[in-house]
Amino acid sequence: TGERFQNELEVSRRIQHPNVLRCEGFYQDHVFTAFGMDYLNGGTLSDYLEKNTVSPWEEFIPLMLQLCSGVHALHFNGIIHRDLKPENILLTPNLDLKIADFGIAVIGDNVTCGEDDVMVGTLNYLSPEYIEKGIYDMRSDIYSIGIIAFELLTGKLPFSGKSPLENLMQRVQDKPLRPEYIRNDCPFDLSNIVLKALHKDPEKRFQSAAEFADALMQTESFEEYVRSGYDAPETYQPTALP
Image 1 (cartoon, helix red, strand yellow):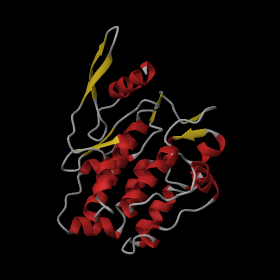
Image 2 (image 1 turned 180 degrees about the vertical axis):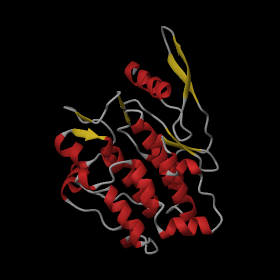
Image 3 (image 1 turned 90 degrees about the vertical axis):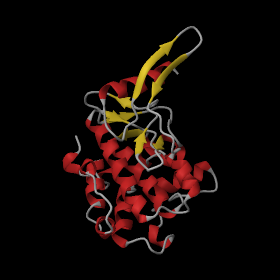
Image 4 (image 1 turned 135 degrees about the horizontal axis):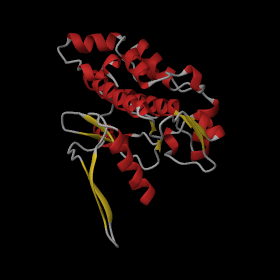
Protein backbone atom coordinates (compact mmCIF):
# COMPACT_ATOMS: atom_id res chain seq x y z
CA THR A 1 0.00 0.00 0.00
CA GLY A 2 2.82 2.38 0.85
CA GLU A 3 4.41 1.85 -2.56
CA ARG A 4 1.10 2.49 -4.32
CA PHE A 5 0.69 5.76 -2.39
CA GLN A 6 4.23 6.79 -3.32
CA ASN A 7 3.44 6.10 -6.98
CA GLU A 8 0.36 8.30 -6.82
CA LEU A 9 2.34 11.14 -5.29
CA GLU A 10 5.25 10.73 -7.70
CA VAL A 11 2.93 10.98 -10.71
CA SER A 12 1.35 14.08 -9.19
CA ARG A 13 4.80 15.59 -8.71
CA ARG A 14 5.84 14.89 -12.29
CA ILE A 15 2.78 15.95 -14.24
CA GLN A 16 0.14 18.66 -14.36
CA HIS A 17 -2.34 17.98 -17.13
CA PRO A 18 -6.10 18.61 -17.40
CA ASN A 19 -6.77 14.92 -18.12
CA VAL A 20 -4.67 13.46 -15.30
CA LEU A 21 -5.95 13.44 -11.71
CA ARG A 22 -3.82 15.52 -9.39
CA CYS A 23 -3.06 14.50 -5.81
CA GLU A 24 -2.53 17.19 -3.21
CA GLY A 25 -1.44 16.88 0.38
CA PHE A 26 -0.26 13.83 2.28
CA TYR A 27 -1.15 12.56 5.75
CA GLN A 28 0.30 9.68 7.73
CA ASP A 29 0.14 8.56 11.35
CA HIS A 30 0.35 5.23 13.15
CA VAL A 31 -3.08 4.24 11.80
CA PHE A 32 -3.78 6.04 8.52
CA THR A 33 -1.95 6.90 5.32
CA ALA A 34 -3.90 9.23 3.04
CA PHE A 35 -3.68 11.98 0.45
CA GLY A 36 -6.08 14.46 -1.08
CA MET A 37 -7.06 14.65 -4.74
CA ASP A 38 -9.23 16.60 -7.15
CA TYR A 39 -12.95 16.04 -6.60
CA LEU A 40 -14.97 14.89 -9.62
CA ASN A 41 -18.67 14.22 -9.15
CA GLY A 42 -19.54 12.57 -12.45
CA GLY A 43 -18.61 9.01 -11.50
CA THR A 44 -16.27 6.80 -13.49
CA LEU A 45 -16.23 5.81 -17.14
CA SER A 46 -17.45 2.43 -15.92
CA ASP A 47 -20.54 4.14 -14.49
CA TYR A 48 -20.98 5.93 -17.82
CA LEU A 49 -20.86 2.61 -19.70
CA GLU A 50 -23.52 1.16 -17.40
CA LYS A 51 -25.86 4.05 -18.26
CA ASN A 52 -25.14 4.11 -22.00
CA THR A 53 -25.55 1.04 -24.18
CA VAL A 54 -23.12 2.65 -26.62
CA SER A 55 -21.49 6.06 -26.63
CA PRO A 56 -23.07 8.68 -28.95
CA TRP A 57 -20.59 10.12 -31.47
CA GLU A 58 -20.72 13.57 -29.90
CA GLU A 59 -19.53 11.98 -26.63
CA PHE A 60 -17.24 9.25 -27.99
CA ILE A 61 -14.99 11.70 -29.86
CA PRO A 62 -14.18 14.07 -26.94
CA LEU A 63 -13.88 11.21 -24.45
CA MET A 64 -11.31 9.40 -26.59
CA LEU A 65 -9.37 12.57 -27.44
CA GLN A 66 -9.14 13.49 -23.77
CA LEU A 67 -8.03 9.97 -22.91
CA CYS A 68 -5.34 10.02 -25.61
CA SER A 69 -4.20 13.44 -24.46
CA GLY A 70 -3.82 12.31 -20.85
CA VAL A 71 -2.06 9.07 -21.76
CA HIS A 72 0.34 10.87 -24.08
CA ALA A 73 1.20 13.32 -21.30
CA LEU A 74 1.91 10.41 -18.95
CA HIS A 75 4.18 8.72 -21.47
CA PHE A 76 5.96 11.98 -22.26
CA ASN A 77 6.78 12.25 -18.57
CA GLY A 78 8.14 8.70 -18.35
CA ILE A 79 5.05 7.07 -16.83
CA ILE A 80 3.46 3.80 -18.00
CA HIS A 81 0.06 3.52 -16.32
CA ARG A 82 -0.36 -0.27 -16.70
CA ASP A 83 -3.95 -0.36 -15.38
CA LEU A 84 -6.00 1.76 -17.75
CA LYS A 85 -9.64 0.72 -17.51
CA PRO A 86 -13.02 2.47 -17.18
CA GLU A 87 -12.95 2.17 -13.37
CA ASN A 88 -9.76 4.24 -13.26
CA ILE A 89 -11.09 7.07 -15.42
CA LEU A 90 -13.06 9.76 -13.60
CA LEU A 91 -15.59 12.15 -15.14
CA THR A 92 -17.34 15.39 -14.38
CA PRO A 93 -21.05 15.73 -15.25
CA ASN A 94 -19.88 17.56 -18.42
CA LEU A 95 -17.72 14.55 -19.36
CA ASP A 96 -14.41 16.21 -18.63
CA LEU A 97 -12.09 13.25 -18.09
CA LYS A 98 -9.21 12.57 -15.70
CA ILE A 99 -7.04 9.45 -15.54
CA ALA A 100 -6.55 8.14 -12.00
CA ASP A 101 -5.04 5.28 -9.96
CA PHE A 102 -1.30 5.07 -10.55
CA GLY A 103 -0.69 2.42 -7.90
CA ILE A 104 1.06 -0.02 -10.27
CA ALA A 105 2.42 2.57 -12.70
CA VAL A 106 6.08 2.40 -13.66
CA ILE A 107 7.81 5.73 -13.33
CA GLY A 108 11.24 6.73 -14.55
CA ASP A 109 13.16 9.18 -16.68
CA ASN A 110 13.54 6.79 -19.63
CA VAL A 111 10.83 4.18 -19.17
CA THR A 112 10.32 2.24 -22.38
CA CYS A 113 10.00 -1.44 -21.49
CA GLY A 114 9.75 -3.77 -18.50
CA GLU A 115 9.14 -7.36 -17.55
CA ASP A 116 7.18 -9.01 -14.73
CA ASP A 117 7.47 -12.43 -13.16
CA VAL A 118 3.99 -12.11 -11.64
CA MET A 119 1.04 -10.78 -13.65
CA VAL A 120 -0.41 -7.49 -12.41
CA GLY A 121 -3.22 -5.33 -13.74
CA THR A 122 -6.81 -6.07 -14.76
CA LEU A 123 -7.28 -9.17 -16.93
CA ASN A 124 -9.67 -7.70 -19.51
CA TYR A 125 -7.26 -4.88 -20.36
CA LEU A 126 -3.90 -6.68 -20.47
CA SER A 127 -2.01 -6.63 -23.76
CA PRO A 128 -1.12 -9.85 -25.65
CA GLU A 129 2.64 -9.35 -25.19
CA TYR A 130 2.16 -9.02 -21.45
CA ILE A 131 -0.07 -12.10 -21.25
CA GLU A 132 2.31 -14.20 -23.35
CA LYS A 133 5.74 -12.95 -22.29
CA GLY A 134 5.27 -10.74 -19.23
CA ILE A 135 6.71 -7.72 -21.08
CA TYR A 136 5.18 -4.29 -21.39
CA ASP A 137 5.92 -0.82 -22.67
CA MET A 138 3.96 2.30 -23.52
CA ARG A 139 2.23 0.50 -26.38
CA SER A 140 0.64 -1.81 -23.80
CA ASP A 141 -1.23 1.27 -22.55
CA ILE A 142 -2.26 1.94 -26.17
CA TYR A 143 -3.78 -1.56 -26.29
CA SER A 144 -5.73 -0.83 -23.10
CA ILE A 145 -7.24 2.37 -24.47
CA GLY A 146 -8.07 0.47 -27.65
CA ILE A 147 -10.20 -1.87 -25.53
CA ILE A 148 -11.83 1.14 -23.87
CA ALA A 149 -12.59 2.59 -27.32
CA PHE A 150 -14.12 -0.74 -28.39
CA GLU A 151 -16.31 -0.74 -25.26
CA LEU A 152 -17.48 2.82 -25.87
CA LEU A 153 -18.37 2.00 -29.47
CA THR A 154 -20.10 -1.33 -28.93
CA GLY A 155 -20.97 -1.66 -25.25
CA LYS A 156 -18.99 -4.92 -25.22
CA LEU A 157 -15.45 -6.13 -24.67
CA PRO A 158 -13.61 -7.30 -27.81
CA PHE A 159 -13.06 -10.76 -26.29
CA SER A 160 -15.48 -12.69 -24.12
CA GLY A 161 -14.15 -16.12 -23.24
CA LYS A 162 -16.16 -18.42 -21.00
CA SER A 163 -13.35 -18.35 -18.43
CA PRO A 164 -10.55 -15.90 -17.56
CA LEU A 165 -8.01 -18.27 -19.13
CA GLU A 166 -10.00 -18.52 -22.37
CA ASN A 167 -10.31 -14.74 -22.44
CA LEU A 168 -6.54 -14.35 -22.11
CA MET A 169 -5.83 -16.92 -24.81
CA GLN A 170 -8.26 -15.28 -27.23
CA ARG A 171 -6.26 -12.06 -26.99
CA VAL A 172 -3.02 -13.88 -27.78
CA GLN A 173 -4.41 -16.06 -30.60
CA ASP A 174 -7.49 -14.40 -32.12
CA LYS A 175 -8.49 -11.16 -33.79
CA PRO A 176 -11.38 -9.17 -32.29
CA LEU A 177 -14.61 -8.75 -34.20
CA ARG A 178 -14.84 -5.56 -36.21
CA PRO A 179 -16.90 -3.03 -34.21
CA GLU A 180 -19.38 -2.53 -37.08
CA TYR A 181 -20.39 -6.19 -36.77
CA ILE A 182 -21.73 -5.29 -33.33
CA ARG A 183 -22.80 -1.69 -33.97
CA ASN A 184 -24.17 -1.29 -37.48
CA ASP A 185 -23.68 2.47 -37.65
CA CYS A 186 -19.98 2.32 -36.73
CA PRO A 187 -17.98 3.94 -39.58
CA PHE A 188 -15.43 1.75 -41.35
CA ASP A 189 -12.53 4.16 -40.76
CA LEU A 190 -13.26 4.39 -37.05
CA SER A 191 -13.44 0.61 -36.82
CA ASN A 192 -10.01 0.36 -38.49
CA ILE A 193 -8.51 2.74 -35.94
CA VAL A 194 -9.78 0.72 -33.00
CA LEU A 195 -8.53 -2.53 -34.53
CA LYS A 196 -5.09 -1.00 -35.12
CA ALA A 197 -4.89 -0.08 -31.43
CA LEU A 198 -5.82 -3.70 -30.64
CA HIS A 199 -3.27 -5.33 -32.93
CA LYS A 200 -1.53 -8.32 -31.30
CA ASP A 201 1.83 -7.08 -32.52
CA PRO A 202 2.81 -3.87 -30.66
CA GLU A 203 4.90 -2.81 -33.67
CA LYS A 204 1.70 -2.61 -35.72
CA ARG A 205 -0.27 -0.58 -33.18
CA PHE A 206 -0.22 3.16 -32.85
CA GLN A 207 3.20 3.96 -31.45
CA SER A 208 1.91 6.80 -29.29
CA ALA A 209 -1.34 8.10 -27.89
CA ALA A 210 -0.83 11.27 -29.95
CA GLU A 211 -0.76 9.13 -33.10
CA PHE A 212 -4.01 7.48 -31.94
CA ALA A 213 -5.60 10.92 -31.42
CA ASP A 214 -4.37 12.16 -34.79
CA ALA A 215 -5.97 9.16 -36.52
CA LEU A 216 -9.28 9.86 -34.77
CA MET A 217 -9.19 13.45 -35.99
CA GLN A 218 -8.75 12.31 -39.57
CA THR A 219 -12.07 10.43 -39.54
CA GLU A 220 -15.37 11.55 -41.00
CA SER A 221 -16.85 11.11 -37.52
CA PHE A 222 -14.57 13.86 -36.20
CA GLU A 223 -15.41 16.12 -39.14
CA GLU A 224 -19.12 15.60 -38.46
CA TYR A 225 -18.51 16.30 -34.78
CA VAL A 226 -16.91 19.65 -35.62
CA ARG A 227 -19.53 20.50 -38.30
CA SER A 228 -22.26 19.91 -35.72
CA GLY A 229 -20.95 22.86 -33.75
CA TYR A 230 -19.02 21.05 -31.04
CA ASP A 231 -15.69 22.46 -29.97
CA ALA A 232 -12.43 20.74 -30.83
CA PRO A 233 -10.25 22.07 -27.98
CA GLU A 234 -6.61 22.72 -28.85
CA THR A 235 -5.48 20.61 -25.89
CA TYR A 236 -6.76 17.53 -27.74
CA GLN A 237 -4.56 18.24 -30.75
CA PRO A 238 -1.37 16.15 -30.90
CA THR A 239 0.60 19.30 -31.81
CA ALA A 240 -0.50 20.83 -28.51
CA LEU A 241 0.30 17.77 -26.43
CA PRO A 242 3.48 17.99 -24.32
